[in-house]
Amino acid sequence: MQQAPMTMAEETAGDWWEVEALYDLCFAPGRSALSSYRLRDGVPPIAPLCLTARDEHGILAGAVRNWPVCIHGHLAVLLGPIAVHPTRQGEGVAAMLMRQCLAVAADHGWDRVMLVGDAPYYGRFGFEKLQGVEMPPPTNPDRVLGLALRDGAWDGIRGHVTQATDCK
Image (cartoon, rainbow, N blue to C red; front, top):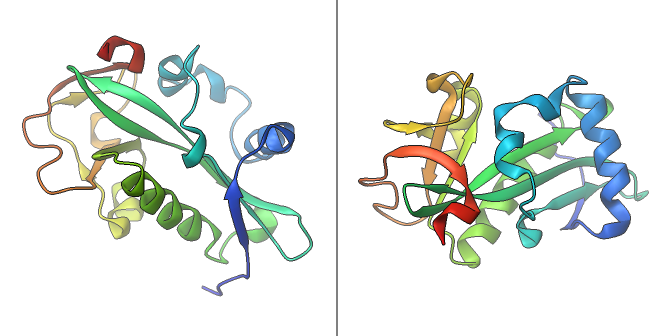
């Protein structure tokens, strides 16, 4: 994998439509029907964890957004979606976004991060299958993964994943 020179920055309001177009390109048209989108409805994303990666010409190569969620009274970051333009795949853009996103989350005091994805891919970043943490259906429980940003952050965390507003 060749590392591409990229500039990463927090997503701005001016980036929004371009990031949306990238997500439309990379994901199925019905992406907003996924269970994870129900957790995002009406909840603002975690701004410092919404990142863009642009090449030396300022062209958007990838992006990631993150939202807070609640698991039985405990907040977590729901990582994703993360997308890389098809012409930039294989250059390490997703890995750069992932590492930056996790570092910023830790710097901002988040304890735990979760996502829905392939364990073999996300395992290289330290994600493991979460036991007893249930995403809204029809999510495959084998794809519900978590990463502790501090020791023991997932210990004893069990239950249904709901909107962050449920953690009041």
